[in-house]
Image (cartoon, rainbow over all chains, first blue to last red):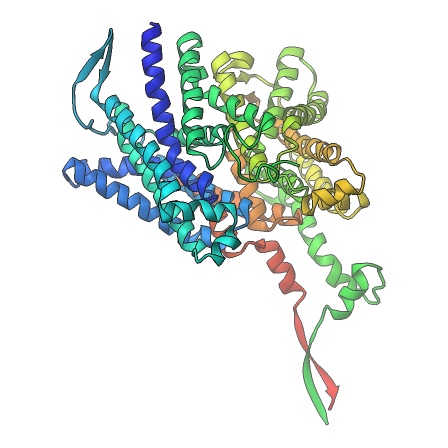
Length: 290
Length: 335
């Protein structure tokens, strides 16, 4: 029992950090709000489903296409919506939240709510660790999740583009004076974030059916992880994922699945009250609070 | 030689009616009085002439207009809420519980729910008053979702079923006019409030909270008061709707009550309250007219929200107001 909880807690934590990476890249690292993140995630899932079942594409082509499509949509979202309200933080939030809401509710309206909407797993089968069976998909999640987290850390600390991502959040004017086109970088950041949402979706969604409501949960989970970890910190994302992941698993095991989501929500509240800049956040520590 | 030039008809009128009232003719008085008076008369007459179905729509519209006003008020103090449903649901549940468990009469439950709902929301949000901007918004987005899930998980207060059998108003005229009159009081009351010294301090908190602090004013206390006022208005809406539908349940924390007031205020124009009301009176009937598209309602709100915030951020009200003051006429001048 304990072993199962530990192992599945670990997997749950990796899932959370996978979900949060894209949001962290856009909102945390570049300081651009993308509250349509949950919608991007669900959109990618449905896109893959449509590509496979309606257009009968091979699986991997569908996945790649869906990731590219979602990233493109992110770029379009930036170009046509975010660019016009850039800098007005509240407008950014409301506008992107509106776009996400529209996408999600449109799917609900179109009737994408039945149980037929499932994605195929990468490879079938399971392995045994101790007495616990783990299917291959969860191993894929763990592998890709760890690789992406490490990759994101290296990307934001050791490549020119990644450093530019962080620069525009730290000080946009200085970034401009150093020759960083902040509008272009922010656009790329939104696109990358959306693309990561799509990657997370094709990895995670095969565990169950795709449902519209999951879009809201994904956004809340991603927000929870980013806020608790501290904006702009990849290490923070991983640590916060493990905190919430295990907390969720323990509440699930001891008080029932209904309480699982409440953990994230309560965690957001507590951390915002106690330490708004998060566990590892360094940016703008003073500006968040008065 | 006579020549003609264009003259703005409001030039003199506006100058004389902005601060001190020194209007000199019926014409000028009409110019100033028609825009506020006409909608008020229309609102009071509408229940008399509308068919029963559209009366229900009017009732809903009025409620959403009130919610939009309460949202607008919070924004003018610098607190952007993404979860007006918190206030709404809180009022609904307080009224529902007072009715269901204590059996109080309706003329007691609604005022009590208004006050206690507002107070509860304020206490709940008290720890996050120090947050500003997006962080405050996130908390307000999260809170109604959390309360909804807690009610679902614990099954308290009726759980997923909700509480049914709440006492109705009984008289549909009372039902209708109570909410219309409250809306008018709130609309003109808030418009007056923000021009008083008290309102100026609240607005100053939005513009520059630190300078308000350095003026020796306790901004947290002011913010808490603003929250209480806004929360009370929202709670009133919840309590009222509870008695109209004779039901209180988890849908009271639904996204509709968060997103619609926001959309109304943004479409109508923020900061004037009249704009929020206008936005509600555009969006709600519009979505009723499009009822056969059903689930597209929220999509419609969300899209109008995005379109307006991107293309016409000032809102319809400000736009019309500007145009109204730019009416021109030809006048003869000596050349």
